[in-house]
Amino acid sequence: MLNDPRSHGLWEKTAPAAPKTTALQGDVTADVVIVGGGFTGLSAALHLAEKGVKAVVLEGVEIGFGGSGRNVGLVNAGMWVMPDDLPGVLGQKYGDRLLDVLGNAPKLVFDLIEKHKIACEVEKQGTLHCAVGKKGMKELEERYEQWARRGANVELLDAQETESKLGTKAYASSLLDLRAGTIQPLAYVRGLGHAAIAAGAQVFTRSPVTSAAEENGKWVVRTAQGSVRADWVIVATNAYTKAPWAEVRAELVHLPYFNMATKPLSDSLKKTILPERQGVWDTKEVLSSYRFDQQGRLVFGSVGALRNTGVAVHRAWAKKALKRIYPQIGDVEFETEWYGKIGMTNDSLPKYHRLGRNVVGFSGYNGRGIAPGTVFGKFLAQLVSGEITEADLPLPVTDPKEQSFRSLREAYYEAGAQIAHVGEMII
Image 1 (cartoon, helix red, strand yellow):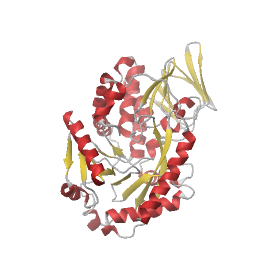
Image 2: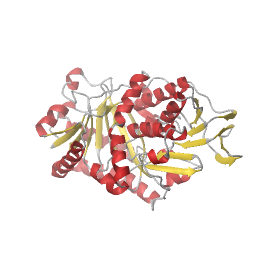
Image 3: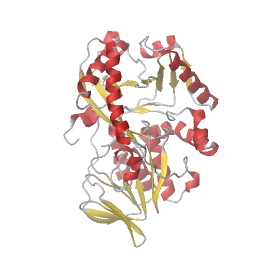
Image 4: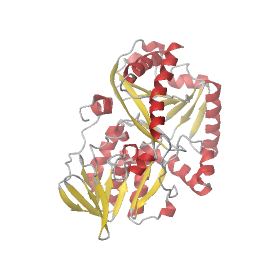
């Protein structure tokens, strides 16, 4: 997108075409205007349209341009925060409610894919969170106990069982989450766009919002060449938020994350690497992740930005790290490479905001955008259509609060990832 091969990489190369859209021209009216054409915005549009509510989506670039079209494609349950910690942060009511909602969120994703026949390379064999060292083993033991106590379909695997699932001796143990899976994320978000339009929603791309103001009891959201007048506004821009709701961006610290995809591996290699096609990530602070795409490419990623010196550093590290995990793979060449920005909150939990009268939104997915974004979009549709109230949401209302030293911390994360990867190559 925007003639940048490092924005969406493999996903743009292999995703089915997006629905045909145009930029907003002139003035239109709707019940709800949704700003952002990613998982949250298009899920909200789809669920609203299915209720007969007139929804208009304004996307600044193209469907899935932000984090929705750049991520690894792991459809995970829950958040990074340990399950038992959520009630302590949010209170018992919201903590338990959010755990239940996010624990079941992958099912909504898979149900929508099946219902709307979205071609997005879906794999439902689960994901594997892999332990590095004794500290990682302890973390997974605690995470397993806390999820299992809540009845989640998870299994704690020892080193031998982990090796049989992954085809490597690199990890001490793993947590298999059978609620989860993988998808081609850009294909999925484009599929949501197709489904929303088919249900009656209007989607305009290349239409960044320039202003929003109340006029005679309605919201008027303007772009360069038009406007939408509506009763409600849903802000669904997350880490890529710009004006006029800059306070959403101010609450998030950007963590860069890149992915690199090999050429399709041989049939013999594919039999020895992830034979059941789970998605994988590890317990390291500067974590790594990998999964197969449908054509047998291994998609390998980690924290870091593919710009300036980061391009050479992360590419060299990825080649060495992948060969260390799977010696049989030999010297790999990456066919595509890309990166994006993860929006991190101060407590690693998502937020629900009321940004004005009848202006609402969720943000802060902390690297867990697919399932939470989809389910939160559905909640927003239920809220603005009057099906539920704010008291029924899985998160309380909070005011956006700017994180301190944001720019400095973002620079630190980008530089720190390079330092960490250089250090691993020296060892």
